[in-house]
Each structure stands twice: as C-alpha cells, then as structure tokens.
Amino acid sequence: LELAKTYYELEQYQECLDAVDRYGGKKTAIFRKDYDYAQVLPKAVISAAYVYGLDENYAGIAAQYLDELIKNTSGKDWELRYFAAQSYMNMAAIAETKENLAKAYTILLENVTHLSKQQEQYLADYIAPVKENVDKVKTKAQKKQSEKTIKELKKARETELPPLSQPLVVNYEALRLLMDELEISAQERQRIQTIVKDAFINPAFINKYFPDKKTYQADEIAFSRGNIAIIEIVLVSVFVPIAIVSLVIFITGFLDESFGTVIICGLLLAATIFSFCFFISSKSPIKNTTEWKSAKFNLPAGFLSKDSAIHFTILANEDIAGEGTEYAVKKVDRNKRTDIDKFKAYSVLKLSSPVKIKRNQEYVCKLTITTFDVPQTLLFSCPAGKIDFTYQGMENAN
Image 1 (cartoon, rainbow, N blue to C red):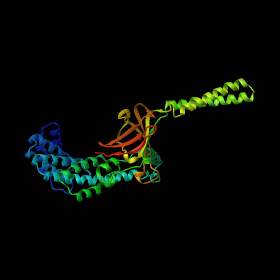
Image 2 (cartoon, helix red, strand yellow; image 1 turned 45 degrees about the horizontal axis):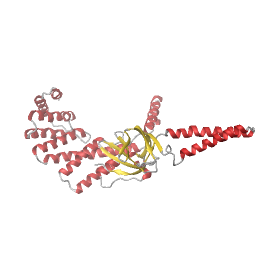
Image 3 (cartoon, rainbow, N blue to C red; image 1 turned 90 degrees about the vertical axis):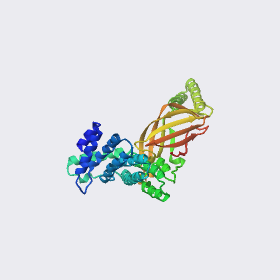
Image 4 (cartoon, rainbow, N blue to C red; image 1 turned 180 degrees about the vertical axis):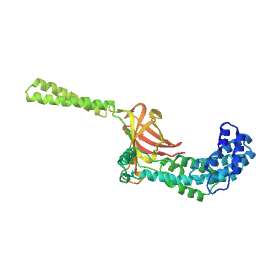
C-alpha cells in the first residue's frame, strides 16, 4: 500500500494500479474492515481514469475498486463513501445507465442517516449545560485544571452558536439531486425528510428542504442602530450641561440679589432651552437625520453558525445607502431553556462606511445570512417619517 501511494504521488499511475492489485490479490479473508486499504482505493480509482481514460473500460475497473472501498468502510468514513458516490455518478454519465446512480443513492442515504444522528447529538451537547465533574478528579492539580477548563467552556458558551454539520449538508444536497434523477417516490422522500428533520434548525435549510416553512413575528427579530449619532452626543453633552450651569448661577444670583447675573443667566438659560427644543422638534433637519456606523440585530440563534457570512444592505429608492459584511456575536441568550428555538443571538454589524438615515426618506434593509452556500435574506423596512427599522419577513432560499 505504501508503494501504491508513492507511485501515485510520482504520477506513475499504472504502477500504482499494479501495487494495489497485488495487495488485493494477497489480502486474506478477515472479519474486519481494512481501513488502510480503503484509504488507498480512491487513488486507484483516479489512477484508472488516467490510464484508461473516461470510457467503459475505466468504469468496469473503477467499479471493482469502489465495491472494495464500500466493503471496507462504515458510516463514520463518510468522506471515502462520498468519494465513492461521486465516482458512481461519474460512471453513470459514461455508461448512461441508472444502475450506478442507484448505488450512489444508497451510499448517500447511508451517509445522510449517519450524519443526521451525529448532528442531532451535536445539538444535544450544545443545548445541555456544561458538565462539572470537579469532584471526580483525584489530585489537586487535576482539580485545578478541571476548574479552569469548565470556566473556559462556560465563557465560550456565552457566544457559542449552534453547530451545523457541513458533511450533512453536502451529502444531503447530493442526495436530493439523485432523488429527482431517479424519480424517487413521494413516500420515500417523506421518509428521508423524517430522518433529517431534527438535524436542521437553521431556517434557511428548513425553508429550502421542508414543505412547512419557518416564520417569525416582528418581535422575534430586531434590527436597530448600533451607535449614538454625533448630534445626539452634542445634545446631551453640550446643551444639558449649559442648561444646568445656567440654572445654578441663576439661582445663586437670585439668592445673592445680583440681578445683573440673574438677567444674564436667565437669558442664557432661555436661549439654551429654546435651542434644545428647536433641535429635537420634528421640523429640525438635524433631528430628522441620524447617522449609522454600525447596526445591532438580535434573532433566533439558529439563523447563525460559526461558518455563517453576512451581507447587509440599506436601500433608499433602490439605491444603496450603506452596506457591510463584518459582524460579531456579543451574546447568545439561552433563557435557561432547553428549547433551542428560543435561544437568541445578539450581534453587532459594522457598516463599511457611515450612512445617514433621513426621516423623510423610506428605506429598506436586506440582511442576508449565508451558511454553506445556502442564503436566507431577512427584510426590514423604515417608512418615511421614521428612523427605526421593523422586521417584515424572509426571502426563501433557492
């Protein structure tokens, strides 16, 4: 087997096939899977393609290697089995027969079944509280290390997102294609959906894979400005202190019967109050414009995973007013519940450049979350006369 690997790396593909065949011919009948043999077989399949070309001769020889690969692997070896399924699909295109497609379908279904159970276990571990087994350790050093590990795990849980198995997504996507190609019955499709149903909690995948679409109410998903605008800082840090100082001096002057000071401070206080009222009035152009440098959004944690990417766009009359892609999860609120659908993720999104939201302008926001090439777009609107966005619904994934 090592010789076969070496020949493959040296691109001596016929010699690679010869080495694999010699090993296969000497292989004795045993009651366990030969994993080392299985790992070399994909190299033999690829070598056969180089030696014989993609014709029917190749298909016959590759099929022998693939049959051996399946015999010597189990559910946990999904990558090798996925390779076998893809190879059978390629061979089906060469021979123009559905027999190899059926073999690929069987392999992918076994992969999906195994990976679905694995994903369900990942979710169960994520939902469960951190296990604390400090009392079971034997030495003080072990206890100290255990306490440190538990503390780190609890800290990580504060921002940890639900797990999502990419192997499951990859295998299920391929399986769905074969369902159409092989014209799988509605009853069988429903059975497969039952297998994977509890493995997917991400709304993008639920809306793509299942007939019952996931929906949310406006109070379950929120989107708002993430920073305080400069004008509001001015209002608070300038006008208010001036008003307080003027009022103190006004009272002090009145008590000391210093009427000149009273008049001056009274006029200053009146001017300050008048200016403050002007800037917060609905007619003030400054009050009617708010600057965004970042945005906050909170939504069910299932929307996100560690592999999710976000693209955020604010549109004014279909023109881009602002956008961004950089985000950070600040907190995952578990609400002390075991229902993962109730977990909330609080995140901050940084805009590429500041955007000014005008009260007299209508805006639309599109927040697209993409996980393993499956997008889900959340829609928000800000009608004229407002400066806040409200959740409107979702655009389903393709």
